[in-house]
Length: 510
Image: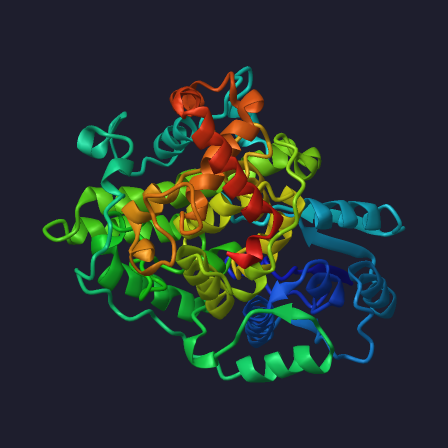
């Protein structure tokens, strides 16, 4: 008998493991406190994972595969991966143990160590999901000092011949990012979000409560937006193509108080648990575009492809190149605690209130809310990156460490000193106003950087540049802003820094 482990983010029905049904193979899947408790997760995230895992196991069983599935409250559940595996290896008198290589360093190390304790044959398989190997990015950038995502993205476009005309990009441009920065002002109309049906959600929420699993966030099953099986995920992808793709690129960076989803696809959860394959998603979107070029422009599609083909694979490559040291990087030596309002949404800063409340209500925020609202404030407020990581990893349904860590510690917090981002992504209130309507009804004055009603982002921005100028002095992309900092009259700079210190000492009062 061979025991094969399937982890909660390895729900790939197209994997070669499942092509044949073998009586000598038993698949095992576990809901475990080890995974619910290593960080405090959003309730919708845990429910989504468990619902998807259960449906995956049921599908395998319906295909004739032998499956052992341990629910969280099973009497023989040891709540630990190694102990559960030992239990069934003994029970089944297994002569071999096989698993798909985890995408988290933590679990990868745990399984390598576990296999060393066994006296049976062990084997690791690829998940057959990603478009690159763990080491491909490192090989691509060998000998280079900077790992520029754009160059890797072009390599991927050529490798898979996507949106290409021979050796040149369609539209004569590799990147339409400048077309992806339109502010949404109420038009065009945003279609309702696709809501997959799932009758098991409330029971899973009750299970977590009964078992004492500590979670964060809110839960309304009528607004639960995560597909937990392949059929629903494919329907959600189709819905995106038919209703949202037409304006996705234009408004992918936009934010609005009345809108949670805008024109975003919301398929990141399905991708990250491997219900969908990235190449099928990209090819489906491109095929739909080709059939509808009279209404969909290339810039809408390229912006979407870049996120999956470029950024997603790039993040994974950075993760495996830099771990485990990456998780300890704190280049700017930030030390302050995370404000309480990140857990409650209770702040008078309108942009943060809406972005965090959306996150608490839906376990979701799009990339600009994560980068330029919650991440921007955390960096300006000089929060310790460990605390920022914990929050991002817990609150978002699509957050798995391989993608969360380099996005947060690298792109958002610049804690890696520039491995991912060429400069810290910080801004004053002006950028937030440019991309959203958050500032219109805010208590604070967007145009002021001193005084009681000054936008906290403004005073924190200039204070950050002054506090961290020794770290940024050699960064060419920060040179202009540092020159502007030098031109601020000393008396005004003192007032800015006094205002900033009040915010840093008690951010929850703002």
